[in-house]
Image 1: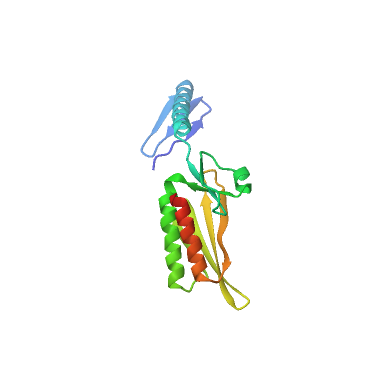
Image 2 (image 1 turned 60 degrees about the horizontal axis):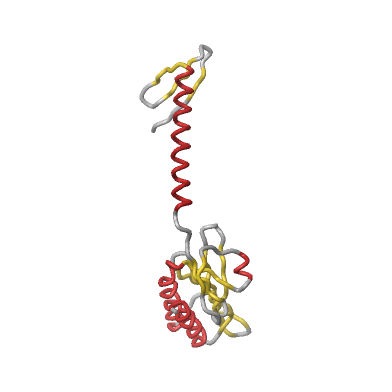
Length: 180
């Protein structure tokens, strides 16, 4: 294990400690070493920040949660769009989301017994939740997307539905909507 420690002795000498050996350096040389390593760290940090800011921002497909208005494109997504019933899906994830939607439709067709299940599609997930509501088994399918800002957005694609055909139709309509 490589480690360094800097000690100031009463004589004004820094000791730089390593696993294998100790090396004494005069104060000015130690300060120069520290300053040069800070310079290198600042340079590396600056280059990384340029790389991060120079990289293209992610592109989103803005889905109308009612699936009535055509989907749009945007480079950013925030609460303002969410309050207007828009939902973000990364443009690069659209094919994976379509596949996941079709997988969920097949799961509902097979009528598997589950109380809670999740199907992932990169940044987006389909969450299936089964409840018993007045002697009927109802299923809710929630779609959740996590964006790079650390925020997550969700909407209920299927709301407490007991008819499996209606659930499948809604999921397949969602797939068709995304593929346009």
